[in-house]
Image (cartoon, rainbow, N blue to C red; front, top):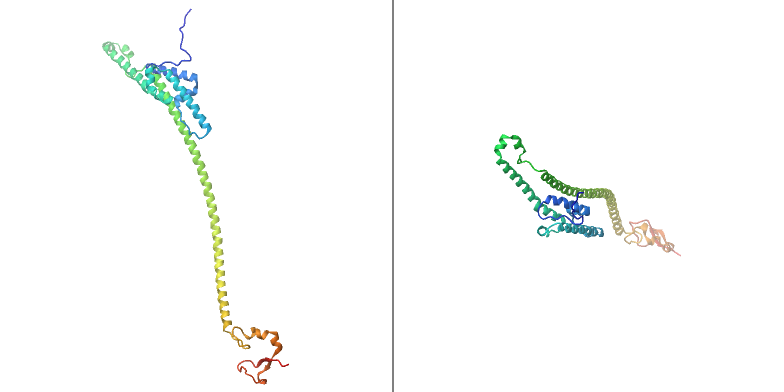
Length: 295
């Protein structure tokens, strides 16, 4: 019977010692996703702390911080001492993962290019055989030929970059949509306020027209009152200059004389011809005179 060796532990992450980064990164990715998909989202997308104004935002920040610390702990457990020293200063799991990509992902690309160059140099040694046997030269490594693993790693890196950029653009689009909705609401509010102000302006114009009409009417009334005042003042001045021919007082005429209208005076006095009495009479006045009545 065939015997199988014992495999890796499910609970322990794969150890990275500075070599074969692409293989280790794929295994570590599957290990973290097996633990929790949200951990890999934190590593891939990162997180931004929201302003702590409401309880919901505080709880969301706490959960994201816990996921970030768990992801960093798993990554540090999968690194040896030398590699962990290089990324121990990072404060985010995303920052740690990107730093490992920069440090070790590029080195593997350089090593692959050097290996291809070495193969090219070794093929030049058999140049004579390559000229005589074109079939053998076709199998030699060209400057543009890459292995399947290198192409797979390059594809994985491009895919990761594409997903990161896609997530960033999605977030930007969502933010722009929110801002667009806010601007549309503000535009509608301004349009409503503009309509209200237009209605108020029309009302004020109509009220202004009414007030102008009232002002004109008041001016007309004021002119008529001034004329009446002038007439009254003229009449009063005329009355002051007038002299009564009955009592010889100024300020009234004979028709409005109070002495003439008094009843007691009428009983005691009568009109008689001027010739019948030897008294001082007004020659230019009337033909009769007002004298006391005889008993």
